[in-house]
Length: 64
Image 1 (cartoon, rainbow, N blue to C red):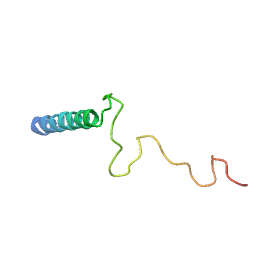
Image 2: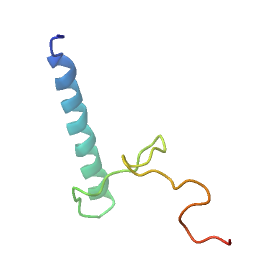
Image 3: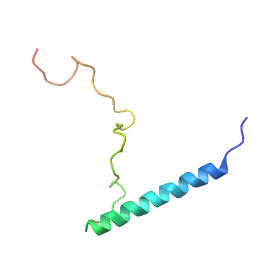
Image 4: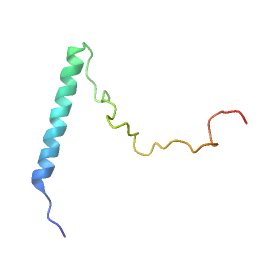
């Protein structure tokens, strides 16, 4: 079994803290109150986990 990489985990926590702090500062500068749900959309265009587009021809209301 591999040993945990504590340095990597710590770095990820630090990056998450920094990102959250920057989002708060941006919201404050824009004059909006920061809330936990005010997260920036994914930059790579990825959708939320579990949210998959409907296959063509199913769901939605198109012409039949």
